[in-house]
Length: 503
Image 1 (cartoon, rainbow, N blue to C red):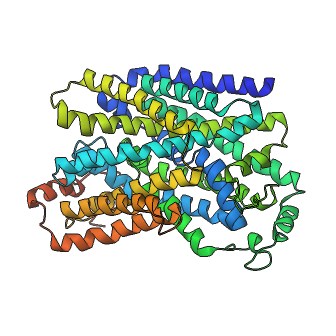
Image 2: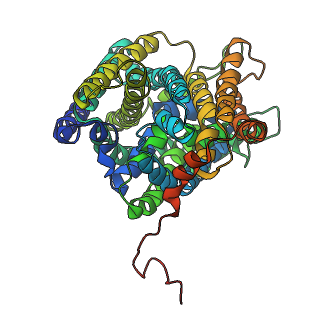
């Protein structure tokens, strides 16, 4: 217990210290929200990765999908690394930085408003972001409950409140730079922690080969050895999870905003590599570990239900105290990094895209900063209230949030960066489709799983936007041309980067 407490105290002290150290970067709106658009490759890559993977992945998703799909759940982590990190950086990173800088946009709703010349779209997007970031935040808290109760016998309510207060302190103090620097520290902890934990768990089952043999012996209705097979017992639903958790990052405001803050070209190139490697280790490691859930000792209840959120804590409960301490710090790192990104995104969006344009158009810098900090605290309080009595297990909460946000925003953002032909009406159609599919499926689950509903919502937006654009009025040519003019500017680079045209 002493070891675990010491690790926690040191961890919290470092987080708070970084928050106050970075206060000098949070003296204006641009610094508080985007770190002055001067964040280097390591900070950006780790900020992206740690915002991507939280306790939701380590505790909720790894346990649930590992139990359902066996070792094949590792494909989810591979998809997260390739589609959610590598391809996302290549397709979105550079263009997002260039176009948002040109449009002087600091948030995703602000980008929609300026790119599609519509204040109403900006306001609607800010409302969607604020509403659906709350269940995601609640799922982050929820992911810690079983682990803390196992390690410290501390009530879940106390854990939620302490984590919320500490995260709030360093984000309010240092803004984006505090979250980015803390993300670097937390990301290093996650990398080391997941490798140590996997080694310890497999060792407890006699090593990798012995664990695979034990997993292959678990009976399945599909085929013998299904949980140790290449694609698992349910490849189709596994694909739905890969789509939601990988493609979903392309439309999440807290993820895309990391590209806004990139410093330069080198940061894009280096950040792409770092972010991908980070995802392979952390996401691949989490789902690989979860793949052994069927031999964790957790069994289905008489009615067939399984306590998915208890699987990973049960797998770790027999580890030595020092390793449990490392796990606690690992999951705290994952959760606090994601939480800080969520609350910063939500408060900045609500202030800059809702309050300012509708109620205080002449709001000065100091008032905007104060307003963001107040909303940041309010957002944390609301999410804590929900987290204290969450409506469902982790995967449901996160599936609802990701489905609505990515379903509504992915297509308008992606097409907005690449196509001059999409229309404002098509953006509204994407908003309606993404939110409509997610919410209607909550009320009447005609799709069944919120995970599959989220994946369908994203794909629907990608299909709906170009179709609606064919039959709706085009945007003003000068507005579109101005938005894309920044991509046509000539830049001078060194010979080692590109050959001259006359050679």
